[in-house]
Length: 192
Image (cartoon, rainbow, N blue to C red; front, side):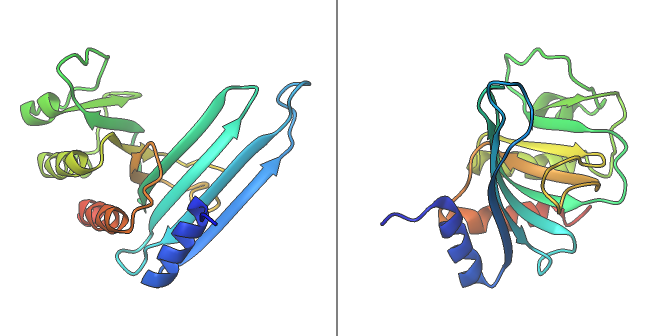
């Protein structure tokens, strides 16, 4: 019998000696009269052995009638302060979205930063970090770096805290890639 994604991740965590928590549930709530349910599952690896307040999170949630879903795998690092929320991704030549400028030509030519305002924390977004982010992007594409202020996530470990994270839009299940993603993500956040 084929193993589920959660079973594969639980086995990986057990083999590596990583603390792991998981939840899979279906909840009823009143979104509209016809359809009242949301399905979610998540797996959280506690990577404290690499760095304090570092987590690898796999999340998948779906609400059928609202056509809303969210699937990602990401390395999350709790940070004491988050000045503004941003989303950063590799810049493509055809990317003409409204973006935040940093006045650093390397950063502005290499990545697209979307944010609420023009305030960018230079401890987080700097040339060295952007270079490391782009190296990770070569291996795991698509990937984005985000900052989160006072997270309102349904995941207990995230709720109410500030985070910086790198995320993909799918779950990484292959052991070697998973080890590499953990290593690269923790190295990226070591300076923060």
